[in-house]
Amino acid sequence: MTQKPPVQKLRPDQHVEPEISDGQIDLIGRVIVLWSKLEAALEDTIWFFLSLEEDEGRMVTMRLSADTKVQMLRALGPRRISDKGLLIEFNKTLGLIDELKDGRNFIAHGVWSR
Image (cartoon, rainbow, N blue to C red; front, side, top):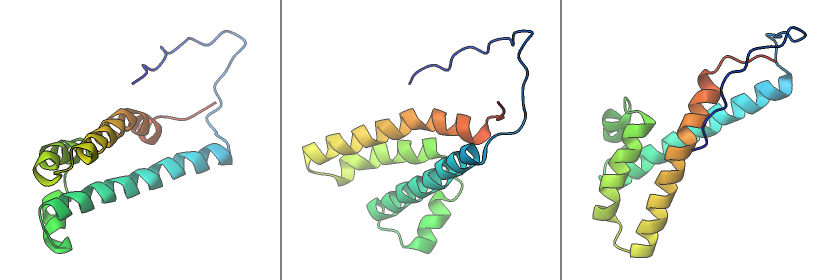
């Protein structure tokens, strides 16, 4: 993943405005909503691989972080996916999720201003 640039000091002619635009708020919200859907899909996949019904599956995955869900799927994938090409794509997708996680966390937990 690309490293965040270092924080730069403001020049004397610059200042921070704590407000952000409605468009920025909408985009931040979109990231949060789509990430929630992604995590739900990770959970569904774990439940499918473990042959769990929704109520049992929730007990297994409800407190797991996205990191833990991805690690669990990395371990389960080779045991449940026999097609080598599909397994390669599955692992690539998990790698992409790993790469996106830090950006999502920055967006979700960052302090926004302009």
